Image 1 (spheres, helix red, strand yellow):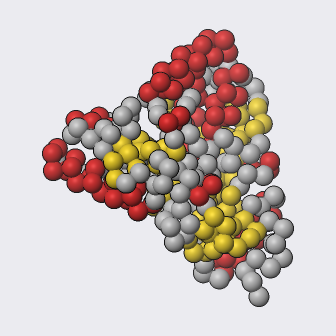
Image 2 (cartoon, rainbow, N blue to C red):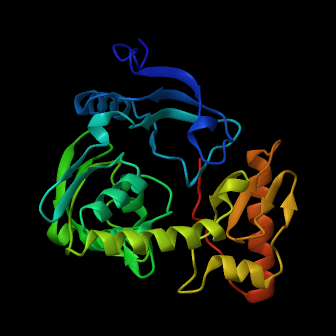
Image 3 (cartoon, rainbow, N blue to C red):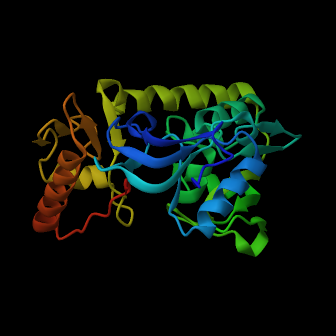
Length: 292
């Protein structure tokens, strides 16, 4: 019996993951599934958990590097409408974890909800942003969370709220396998004013970000208030290249995967940058990109 028997309409074997990541690199998933209902999701997670198989979740793939050999077990992709809904209240939004962060931000701004305009230009999904407490300009997404429904690796659904929610700089207590949905509450502000603020931020960030140059990813975490990009730049590493992977000339914390790039070249460049920054500045950079 195959682990995906009964789920053939939503699951398949040996699915290439390259197209699901921002770097467009990497090998296949042993099993790959795109559930269309919460029941299907729970059923798959329970089956693979009972079989003691690895289970991973891939959102927009903006912080993932998949090796050429691919990954064992199950990779879940939650792109179905049930996981990407946005429901707006008087001063609240209930968002599915699979919702694109850009859609969440634009909806909040249109409704006059203050705060999320600061997150414009950050890639990823709402669930991914909650897992790492994404933020900018002194605002982070955890600021507005009131509760979250999560799915554990054993297939159980729980609601997290109150003292069970904790957020700090780029960290969150929401570490379960899947964030199904979250409820956010906001202060109100004039939508036109928020729109202008968001547009200004977007223009600045677009000019600073090299994503239009090719497949790109943020690589390192900032270090105790020090920008990782600035640390790398101080070491003169902008433009440094290993094979077809390059440190961006615009933002040194972004690596570009040029045509012909490989996952190994990304790893080699990560190590070279870490070594150079440690030797020059006695700072140990920590990767933000997740290595599968």
